[in-house]
Image (tube, rainbow, N blue to C red; front, side, top):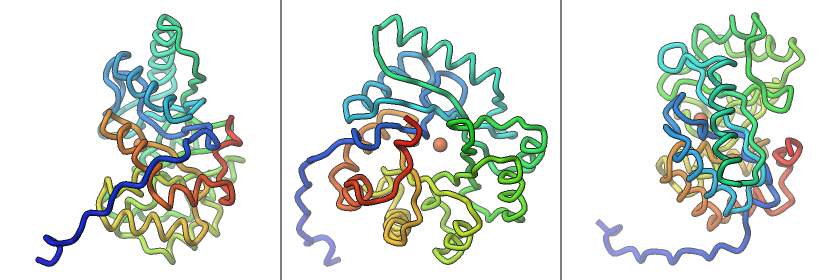
Amino acid sequence: MFGLFKKKQPKRDITFTYEALGVDMHSHVLPGIDDGAQTPEDSIILIKKMMEVGIRKIIATPHIMADYYRNDATSINNALAVLKAELQRQGIDVEVEAAAEHYYDETFESRIDRDELMVIGGKYVLFEFSFISKPPTVFPVIQKIKDKGLQPILAHPERYPYMSLDEYKMLHSWGCLFQLNIISLTGYYGRETKKLAEALIDNHLIDFTSSDMHHPRHAAAFQDALRTTYAEKLLGGEYPLRNSMLL
Ligand SMILES: [Fe+2]
């Protein structure tokens, strides 16, 4: 009940942008192929919001998920072509590429075996776990990706409540990189996710950060994240983020 009387903290001013980051490498801005933008108009709204806060290059990563979004190189490249045509029609000058966010389901390993992964920057494999249950046999899969000469990146590690910081330290030591959704720092996904996001940053476990933008509420949170002290920690120049290597 004391919370009722707690004085609301004034919002910090925005004093920096994503200009130093340059690249957003996790978003769902390709139209009509997953739970992100549904039309090219939706895509443009999100892309303009990213550009307003300093993003110069966007690597769109639609879901590849056996049960829900059966995307492959063809569906993803087709959606990319639709979006690029609309950007050109509207005279919007931004670099857009496409890869994918691979879901760690029973088909993931066979996709690796069959060289069907959609990779970022020629070598990075963005993948996500279930939000509910811990996946079995992670180490051999990480190793399998590395044996292909590719580099695994786990998307939004702060969003899996069944994982501990110690497990993340181990996963990172195996060569799995981590991508933080920067909007987690605003409390967008709740307090526990925010706390884990901050702990991952404090332990120098974050390699990439991005928006994971699906819709305009994410765009608003992406801007709002710039008010947080932890975003300043990540983007201030001291933290060894790798986004700019993808420019
Ligand atoms: Fe995503």
